[in-house]
Image (cartoon, rainbow, N blue to C red):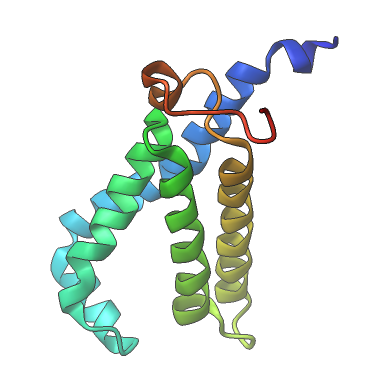
Length: 138
C-alpha cells in the first residue's frame, strides 16, 4: 500500500472541496450581482426568472458536494448543469477565452461524474449518516 492509498480519504475530501468551491463562489456571486446576472442571462436568451434556480443549483449543489450530503445526486445535477452551461454560455469557437471556459465546464462535468461513480468517500455527511455505500461492493 503506497502513500496515495493511505491518503485516499483525505484526497477524496480535498477533491470534493476543490470542485465544489467554484460553484459555491459562483452562486454567491450571482446573489451579490443579481441584476447584472439577470441581464447577462437574458442577453443569452435565458429567462432571468430562472436565476433563483441557477443559484440554488450552484450554491446548494456546491455546498452539498462540499459537505458530502446527497453527494452523488448533487454531483450528477452539477455535471448536467456544467454541460448545459458550457453549451449555452461558452461554446463560441471563434473566441479562445470562451472555448477555455467551455472545456473547463466539460472537465468539471467529468470530475462530477467521477464522484457519481465513486461516491463521496468516508469524510462525508453521507458516510456519517449511513447513506453512502461503496459502488461495486455487495
